[in-house]
Length: 214
Image (cartoon, rainbow, N blue to C red):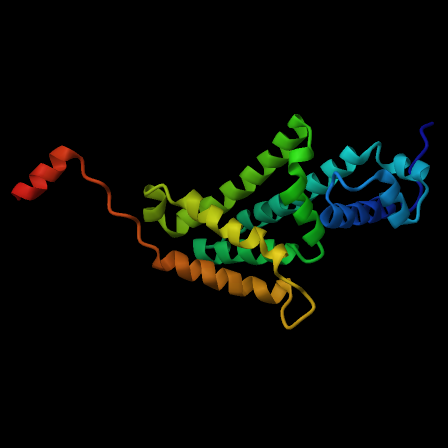
């Protein structure tokens, strides 16, 4: 009979991931050793290897776990029967709020994804692309004219550019936390999206001649 996992196995695994993410975020993946992680966790190195076979496995779990959490939020909201603007606000609110307690994991994803093996990196980045696509569809539904001008995805990338780099300056614990700041981000983006004008289509030479003769 196969041995079952000890009680608390999953909790210990999550604790290891949290310590590893913090170390990677502060020291960088390359600058952190398994000894460092074991010491931070208060475990022997042998015990650490019982949970993760090597440092790369830790990096995969941190990066993939973070993007899968965000993708699950997008899928959950996407399944709700919401109009485009409330759906977009809900997506922004949930994504920003999800960064509470995940700042280290997000920094690792941003800075250290390049250290993943090719297959792992493509899987993680594929999940990221699916998340961006889900938000872009909602942007397009709210402003079909911008979608027609091929602006839905670029505007979505601007949104993620704004949100994804919050960890470089946002300090929770003051007058704002992620949950209270999320609606502000939604107001800023949705308000800007309403005010955005699609560029006028360029005329080809024949159309320009006809316009001049008109």
